[in-house]
Image 1 (spheres, rainbow, N blue to C red):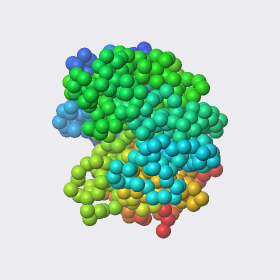
Image 2 (image 1 turned 90 degrees about the vertical axis):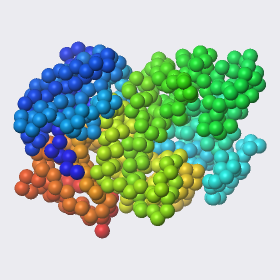
Image 3 (image 1 turned 135 degrees about the vertical axis):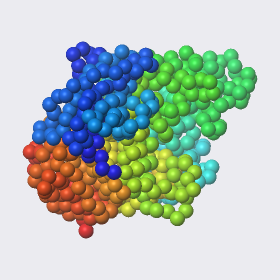
Length: 625
């Protein structure tokens, strides 16, 4: 799939700039000259559910040396969320529509339009983070952990015991990792280049995963209590690392103090906090029918007051001193507030966001969504999703090894393990991210795996993990390491992947992740630049991340390949590309030729600007032969 001759727009600052008034945005389209001349370009916006067509005009290219035509037009933000697309009238070949999925002669759906909002954006720091997910029980034990008595439900485990990953005992095995253990290993995270820790729940619960909280008012004593969280956050902040927590807005545990007060007592104020199947409040609705996870009913004003609204709420408490978390990740965000005829999801997410903006405006709000997240992430509530649909699953489809038998695959009952091309990965990424407002795209969580999935290494070798990790750092969004990725840990099921970290062994990929972190810090275009796809074949893909000041070429491949990209498609001069290792990139006769040998990942700084101390060519590679 040769994408380099396609017209392009995204919501980055290169393509969407402030207008003459705060409510106006100037939007731009880049049209390669190979695409052919245009008679006119119009931007189609939807205002109060009715389309309007606004003219655009040619402008000089904002990129030095760029051989493309640019068009610009102004749109006014007359609704909280404005959808738009472009109509391209060609001189001699009819008209095409341009939306996030590309160009098409057939009029696309409004749901697939670009979107822009006037919402308060996430804090400026958020778009530059490298996230590290910690499952506290399995990360590291401090000396103090041995002295803590286990609750009656827990099954004690030594650090090197095998993980129970099937059966009823799966959530009960406790290895004893705690928050002081995380604090004592912060040096490891600094070496990796980590700048943001995501802690899965730290509240008391009846399981090792703690998504069945018994209260939201204190830190689990097994993890060291409130003081341990304070120590961790303070120590992390001193090292330049921020910390976010994990909230379950969809449910609590069945041992939660609110639920225990409501069970069997319809007169209790907490009775309105949950969904019930009977008037006696003895039969209740639970998440996926799991009886330990009763579902919250957000019709209750008292629940909203206690949990998500105002300075006295759960949301606010942990962002304020003495805890000072830097934000939240919301569990099961896509199901929150939704049950039968009820759909209070927007109410909940905007209430959480409003509270955070009022009490701690410099915080960030991530949220879980396991499927199409575009309808829930419009920039007004949840600020960014976990990118399972756009990144994790299609990445696996492209890079995982073939399997003879069906395997666990994110809960999807495939008859065969999916295998995809690079082109199909790109199609999925465009489909599931294109309609996000750009501030959402800048934060989406790009994880190879998480505590809910098998380990990526279970399905791929070290070289392919390097390719996958490189893409998580190079595409728009937040690169995510699940603790243990740097050790090459394996696990065929989500629970099996929650392996205690093997401290004392060498983390084989730590140097590679550290180099990726260094690259991302040194290249602003990888943090905030737009994304323009150049090539997507069977085995390889190539794209440019670009701002007005910097352009970066990225190539990823799962095997041998040859990629040819015209100079004028890259957008800035591609001079002085050199050969190195498993990737050879040379400029000749008006094209850039890239020869790939085996799985590889490469990054080049284009134009005259170079990273201090680096060669002007390949900055990093996945493997050498």
